[in-house]
Length: 470
Figure (cartoon, one colour):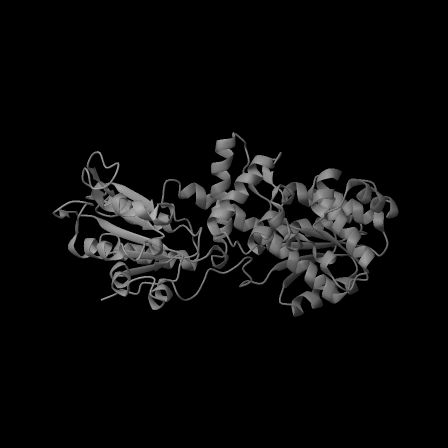
């Protein structure tokens, strides 16, 4: 009987988690402005608290622990810019939004340089405020998730290579726990790059055969004419150049596990012999007169649709049912939610160690790009992306400019709310986008220009038109 232990059902959720309402602290000495903003945000589902000055706000921050702070510039006592600088020094990852007078470009630039996540023009538009706060909250939750995942990677050092805390990976591990000590054949399916060989390694290393050999072969990489000899071995003189007898991979894996990757590529003419080896637990080397008993567990993997291959006559149905006693389906990376960031952190640590660099993590903007990308190459593509970024970066944290171009195309995920607000004039949207890019690049004109897809001269002309300097 075939055990259908598949991975169907729910998938890991994407970030950020919106299950809890965000907490917003409003800082403004104008009671009408406070009341307007509080009403707008409460209607949008946020929990709000209010303060009338910077000193009042500092006391409320300790009591309320807000996720986002929205402050006016002109207040009695400490002004909004100085308040923002202090907040960024004490809690650099709590986003601050500053409200400033419309057209006050100098103050807006000061706000960004003081570390504000974004700025809003007076009088604030309700929809713009909600969008801005939502994006700031996403930024905060991304940062908190990145910190949590760094702790996770430290805690699981040396544990299963199948990293993942999402629902899909939890189900996968439950399936593996049930079959780890079985000798039943396992068929692992999934897209290329999802880590199918890791499943075989985990089953071997955690099972009762762990003291035996683990032998892996990619059936698609071998010459079909030589595959039979590779799998089952041959005796001396069995064919030209067979000058001595040789045991095949089945015999090499005796007492352990044989992993047949891309099993769907085995020629139809060879499939009956593989079927017999699985059924009889014995192999007949090429040219031999007798079979040799072989105690081995076989795990197969493929990214092809074997059921369709059976229907089209390219794969034997009896062999399909024989290797598909236990079916494990690897989920694609795009369905694994925050596991993308967990894997990215692990790959970053490994790549930094190889490169001799002290890179400790990724920025929330990079995290947003990684979550937005659909990863057609799955885990293998993510590992390549992170290794390339670690090699290129000059900082201790990966920035968007370090990512490959195909990932940077998702950079709309990092734009601040005001830059994405369709209610603003196009010129203002562009100006804010440029200023955020400059800030993300550490005021490096060359890096900012590359991120924006501009040349340096064009970027300089834009800044001059707006009366700004890089």
